[in-house]
Image 1 (tube, one colour):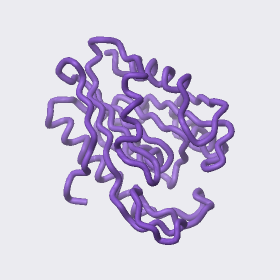
Image 2 (cartoon, rainbow, N blue to C red; image 1 turned 30 degrees about the vertical axis):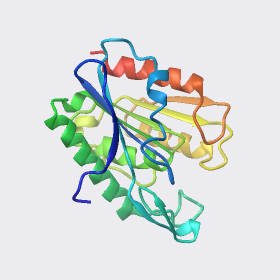
Image 3 (cartoon, one colour; image 1 turned 30 degrees about the horizontal axis):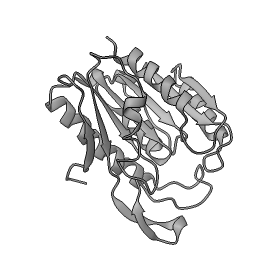
Image 4 (tube, rainbow, N blue to C red; image 1 turned 120 degrees about the vertical axis):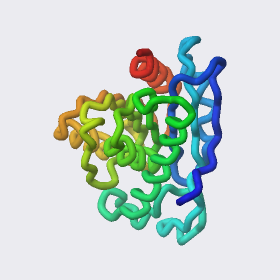
Length: 219
């Protein structure tokens, strides 16, 4: 992935002083979370650029090899057992390149949040925890930790918010809790929130995310 991922970008009213790079789920696109931005109700003056990259289109094994937007191949339905680790890492590298672009555009790394839903969240874990410069935060939604990660020293105390639906049939909530437990064992103090929903987002959650983004980016 030498070329930068194509992205939907939403600029703030003023000059951007922070950025959120937000990864969609399997089969979706960068437009998927675009409507959420105004619903976050971020305060005026918190000038955040939202970057919603499009995943590359690849064949997905569990869907009969159908080509669709995916951050990595899904090899089996027991998603926490058999993982396309090379694909996860390649997508994390592609997100690294987007972080570098934000830095080149004047946003320091410590003002950048990495976010991801479902498959995008698995890539977000890999990207943010191992990134060599301090980031502002990691937001993961309805997702799981696909593979082990060795955190960088710079992000050893990264603020993390994990959200999961208690009725999620696609990514069972136990996988979200397992990721939180793994982070805790690594010395993190993740905020873990559940909502009475399936594999989706809800308004209460969006409001909570807005408050969390305001907290980690308010400095």
